[in-house]
Image 1 (spheres, one colour):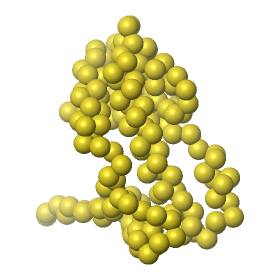
Image 2 (cartoon, one colour):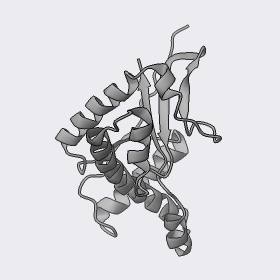
Image 3 (cartoon, one colour):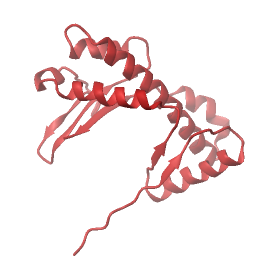
Image 4 (cartoon, rainbow, N blue to C red):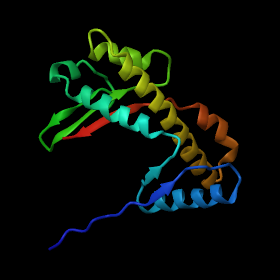
Length: 170
């Protein structure tokens, strides 16, 4: 008995302008991917290569911290604080930063993880979060439009903060 590998759709969100043929085509791809798989892989040219490399470097430093420090990241909400040390997924760890784009949230997280804070981590993760938020808004807008719920767009778009989850599989 063999195993089957699922290949997720890859959707390019580069150079999109609302109400263009490219927007409509991409929106159709998003809707189809969500119906068929519930997810997709996104490409987005608004995140420069130097920022991508910096995020990888900074998150490696984060996950290299001792477990006792990572456990400081607590939350009453599932998957919003430290997640790890589970026997069914022993190589997985995740740290959450709720409402990451609110002023001081990422800096507060860095202060929790590093006694002297970590300005490089804070700046990098904040910049990356802003770029992710751009992509998130595009995808949510496309889904709301696909559902024909345009009249609720503003209410929906204003109702979400960005929960940033940083994950690693060793």
